[in-house]
Image 1 (cartoon, rainbow, N blue to C red):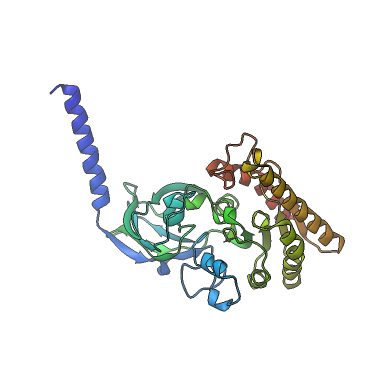
Image 2: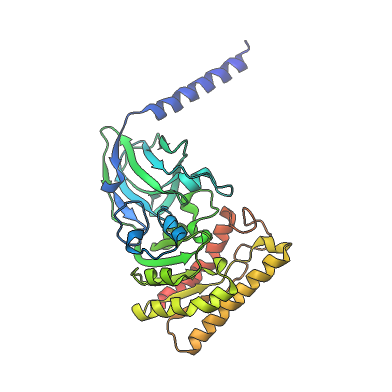
Length: 358
């Protein structure tokens, strides 16, 4: 055996042993209920649900199901452990064809470094229940951690693992205020590669504000029952990104009720209406292109009508190449990929921050 081949085998063997040692380190586990929480829209009996749907029996059945999914929820904690792992269970829901497994059923860990949230690792789901090391071989300094839950599945249980002899403690939420985003599958996080790249999560880490994810995949249609639920959610501002799911007629019939309901309950809270991004399918599909244009025009008319009737602190963000101009910003012609979400946030973040500062 030549020396080069022998060296390569020894290197691979050494790497395998090192990885095995990291994976096999003994961890002790802490239940998520003992840690700090991020993204809690309303108090819930179930730790991982976004809304306690029993409180709102008249919601459409599909909306109730979507509200059990843990999109936007995260846990915050500090630890000096060299290794962080997790044990978690999700529902047996079928894997979606336009989402990664990590987006739908996995975990996403960020650790703060010099005031900035830096990605650290993911929990890759292997079955309905998974036990896995997320990151290892770190130093033993105190680390502030932010662990996002699955975007498109119901989380059943979660425990965080750290090395025996190390510490773990709950942290306060690192995000201030409350900004509710009511939106479609895009707001919920389709089709980011992992939970931390959903746009409400990106906005929170960039701005330090607490953007709450009320994305309702395919069902952000401004139902009256949903509007009545939204006014029970206290927030410092409300973002309405619900055009992608609403037909032009639904926009005409329902926008005023939603906006006026929020304004009546919260007289000074800014309400920001966002047009739909232009779907890349419309490059070639005439019906899609015309429908999105009609949706956006209808939303603009409703905004203008509300302003003319004296509604205050109401703002509008027009579609302006949200996904760029190279037609590479989506997974499937509708839902942004990671590039698309970054471009989208780059457009809307400065406008949102300007509005909130005003």
